[in-house]
Amino acid sequence: MTPEFHERIEQRRKRIALLRELIATFRKGQHALLVGDIKEMQLYTTQQHTLCAELLEMTRAEAGPLPALEDDEAWESWEKLGKEVQELESRARHLGRVQAALLQKGRRALEIYSCLLATLAPTYSPPRALAGR
Image (cartoon, rainbow, N blue to C red; front, side, top):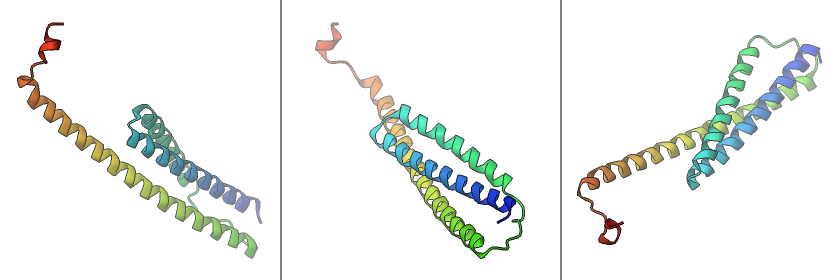
């Protein structure tokens, strides 16, 4: 295996590690969203943004043809890692869509509560026990 190809294999392994980390932040972020922990959700969203930026930069750096291969074992390793990358990218896309749907649903709920409060506020008067305080 040539040093250039070995470097490309290591880049692909790093991509796999970043994708696994991104998937973990999606899962944790979705849990934080469902339990209403906004600070945790913001933390995971920031981490997701950072990981996506790293993955994008890595994609740009990997552009170009592969170095020549003389070894079937190296090619098999490359193909195996490629399949794993595809599976992880697919899972990350799915979890991203799920998170987007959850955020959209939460936004709609907040809009409903906001409208409800806006329509009730002019007619609402506090209970007598609280009015004298």
